[in-house]
Length: 147
Image (cartoon, rainbow, N blue to C red; front, side):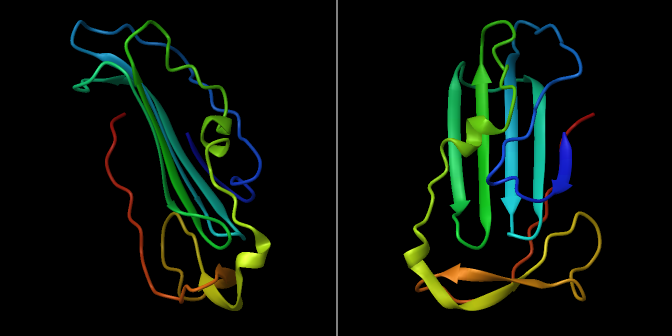
């Protein structure tokens, strides 16, 4: 699943598979979700399917950046029983995110931009940053996957 919109850090998005696959003996089920939210725009990349992962059962949530400002987080679930990768919405990630108190806000804003293709040079908006942080320039590139 690929979705570009807004508000994905606050509101859950439906997440279902179009079909199912049968595992080979050396495969397990997986579901992976990446959320990036910059306030004015959000991105969700998600997949369900088979994997040749080393462990039988894993559930991991990572918060790379928290609110306010930019939210970047991931959810990964590997499991070894039939149809166990059955999360039906992004709520499985949202319920595990930490919310920052608004009293922790800085008084300055930083430019932000989230694009799927192309450059952000002319499309920057602004967001309020958490206290004791500074603005910086960074790019995130997501590559890989199978069809």
